[in-house]
Length: 114
Image (tube, rainbow, N blue to C red; front, side):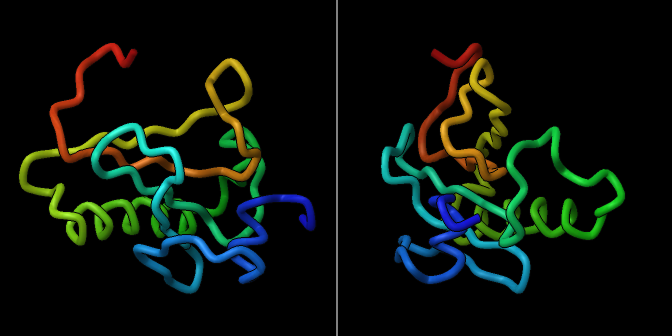
């Protein structure tokens, strides 16, 4: 997707602040952090929303979750805890239509979110 911000990051056209990169996943710092640690984990393959994720692609789902675990460890969040969020479509708060998981931590996170 030539007009997708996150695809441009995967392609190297835009340089994010990378935390982790694997063959299938890219994780980078959010430019508008909502917590002391706020990292986005994306599939390198363009998938617009969670609803568009191919249910049969269990290996990619596993890679995304494994990347969240790795990011939490790298950022020192695994001991005290963190939150992972996936926003889906406009009413869910999705702003960039490329599937991404938010990893938030570094402070106590309350429920419901504000």
